[in-house]
Length: 132
Image (cartoon, rainbow, N blue to C red; front, side):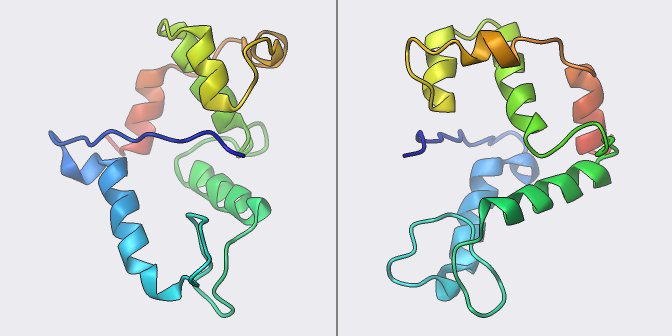
């Protein structure tokens, strides 16, 4: 079971609000979803069903490339590394990081594999992603 993802609303800049975008996506894809579809991402081509993790990985890799990220060096999975590393760097308690990542309280996964320096600054990443 995946941990619950909480997305706060970014009311100061609605065009950058991920929570609003997700709600809009769910509304737009409502007609494509079967009664039993609980997954967030569904295909937009027949048969309309939940997409695989591999498909999501391809989507993320494509977006990383469009954002100017070297996709030979960084993969879709690199976003997980970047997210937990940035959270830790900003002082997030390790127990919250573990819960958010779906790891047990005693897990050493973060310290073994994720506690590494981030290649680019957060400011550089934001400028590229937001096309500033």
